[in-house]
Image (cartoon, rainbow, N blue to C red; front, top):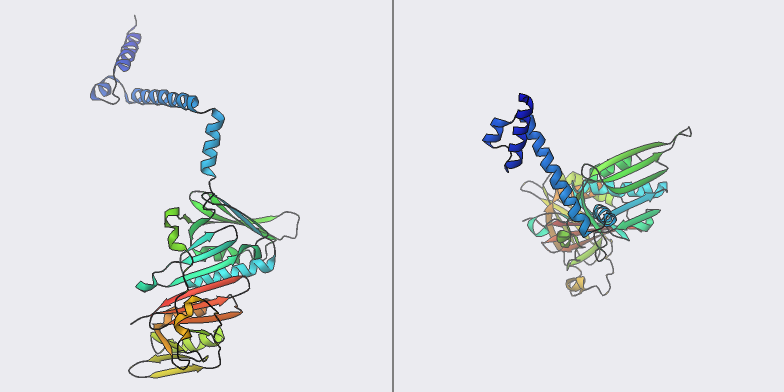
Length: 356
């Protein structure tokens, strides 16, 4: 028998007897390529065995259905056609992007929420922005994580979403959907107008993080604080101009108000003391709301005040693009300033904690 054939049979017999790949004995008997081939052969055997085992448990169609069901467990897609709605939605997102670098986008069948769950007690800022989807979108489809929890929570960077919307201002329609690319993404597809019959489509993939259901309790609507005074704010542009000038003199500002519709903005330092007075602003009628328990028995002339970081108040006033029909402020004495902006289809709440 030729020597080459004998060598081949010897290698085959040894390979069928050994149970361990890559031992010193095999490395001595076989070249590197033979060991690699043996590994591939055994991997193929294992794969065929597993496939046969799964086929006995479930029919082939059921296996395919199960895999698709797992991949498509969450769905979100929405479409905007009206230019006015698109511009309004862009202004809201622009406002959010000025207030925070990252936030939670909570999607439900009826509403969208932008949430910043700052620990106000620890000095963090909180935000809650609510939008009615029916007032913005012509089409809106949502399938949440489960039938009993039909919603989706995503961590997003508002600036990325704002930038994508700004490039789509003249679009004939804008579609937003949740996709899976290299990572979970909010994909924004804008169909832009052209002079020819050829359509021009721009796609933006905005990376997001999916928030697990066990953490959702951190992103529920904040409870209305038990405030001492609630008052309507003066025109926000006027208030912004005042705060901008005061910021050059101090890092902190005292905001005080009473139930006679009077509000003061004050700064006090070793060198200067400045106060701006606003009168006849009015106080919101909260009715039987339990949160106004303190204010009902309060002397209308007595001021409730809170000292805050002036930069946080300035950030709120600078980023405002919602053009609210009503702007209010609730003051919890020496604890929190709760700012509320209301539009017909948007509400924005912003919580600024007190500083010592």
